[in-house]
Amino acid sequence: MILEILNVKKTYQQAAKQIEIFRELNFSIKSEKNIAILGRSGSGKSTLLSLLAGLDKVDAGSIYCFGTDLGRLNESELSAWRSKNLGVIFQQYHLINSLNALENVMLPLEILQQANAREKALEMLDKVGLSERIHHFPSQLSGGEAQRVAIARAFVAEPKLLLADEPSGNLDVETGQKVMQLLLSLSQTKKTTLILVTHDLELAKKCAEVYELKDGMLKLHQ
Image (cartoon, rainbow, N blue to C red; front, side, top):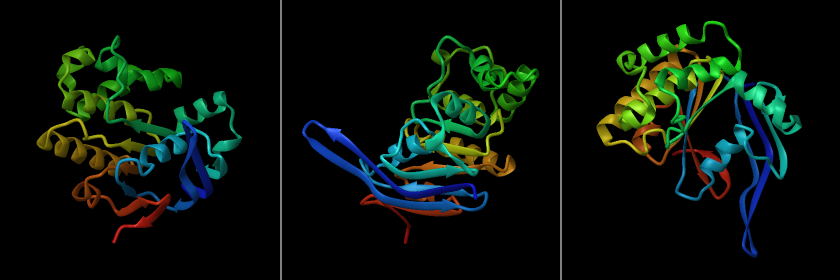
C-alpha cells in the first residue's frame, strides 16, 4: 500500500468560527500511478497535500505512507522521512534565491549526504533541458525555467511519492503544458507515484485517475 488515509478529520479556527475541512476522509493508493485531485478554491486541496507531506497534523484519524504512520513521527523523524521518500513541487517554485540552479538541485542530495550530489544534479538538470543555465540564480530564470529547476530538485533524490500543488499555475498556457508534459514523463520513467492538485480538468485527465475533492470527501470524477 502506497498511501492510506483513514477517517481523517481536520478543522481550522477562523476568528470565532471553526471551519471543517475534512470530516471523515478515507482514501488509498495501492500501486504506482499518476493521480489528479480536482477541487474549487478553498476545498482543501492544499491542506490535503500539507497533511500528506507531514507539514500539518490531522485532528483525528491516521495517514499511512509506505506503511509509516505519519502521526507517530516527531519533527526530526518527519524531516528524515520526507528526505528519503517525498518530493514536493509548489506553484511558487520555492527555490532558494541565494543558490544557483545547480546548488538548488544538489540540496536534497546533500541533506541525504550522498557523495555524488553534483553529478546527479547535473544529470537531472540535463533531463529538464537546463544544462546551460546551471549557474543562473532564480532571479535570472524565467518562470518556466524556475519550475523546471523545481522539478529537477523534486526528482533528483528519486522519491517514491511526488506531491505537485498547481505546478503550472503561474505559467502561461504553452509553458505550463510543456512543464506538465515533463513532469508526467519523469514520473513515469522514474516510477514515482504522483499526486497532482489542479483546477484544470484537461490537465487532470492526463493522469491515470482523477478525483474530485468536494465537501471534505474525495470521489472519482465522473
